[in-house]
Picture 1 (cartoon, one colour):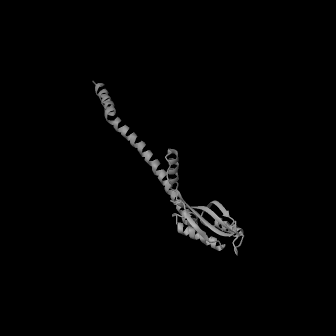
Picture 2 (cartoon, helix red, strand yellow; picture 1 turned 120 degrees about the vertical axis):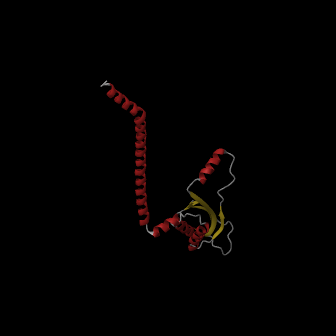
Picture 3 (cartoon, one colour; picture 1 turned 60 degrees about the vertical axis):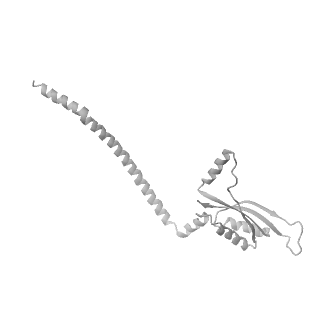
Amino acid sequence: MKLIFPILFILLSIITFIFGTNKFYKDVSALRSDISTYNLAIDNSNDLKSKEDALLTTYNEIKQEDKDRLGNFLPSTVNNIQFILEVERIANLHGMPIKDIKFENKKKDVPVDPNVIIAEENIDRRPYGVFPVEFTTEGKYEAFILFLKDLEYNLRLVDVKSVSFEVSDKPVVGADPSVYTYSLKVETYWLK
């Protein structure tokens, strides 16, 4: 009899552990796993916050003049009128008036071919927009070269896509034969 009570207590404690405590132990183990996952997420969040603070500090150290220049280089809006006025200002510096300004429409009729449609959709997903302009101007070749150089060194990003020129077949009385007509297609960009 002396052994029956201790054996009963041992069996009772094993049964209590298996059916009672073991369930809670598994729950605690799962919660510990969740806690370690959350701690890792908090550590990652703190790392990201410190990187954000470092980037913000770096951004705040940039001079306002440089930020303005960057805004002119790649503006956040298309601002087509200002772009055309800037091109016209550069052309007028060289005595080359801008004429026949045309805006190209990038959204043309979409073909039925599904591969082309996908390509068109990818163009719209770009983080920047393209503003194409076509215009003509007249002037001497030397002035045109200087105009292109000034357009190249202009603060706004401009790609000259094509250049063509015409020489008059019939000389006009009183007109300078060294003045040519130039047709340009240019593109500028803006952030969406």
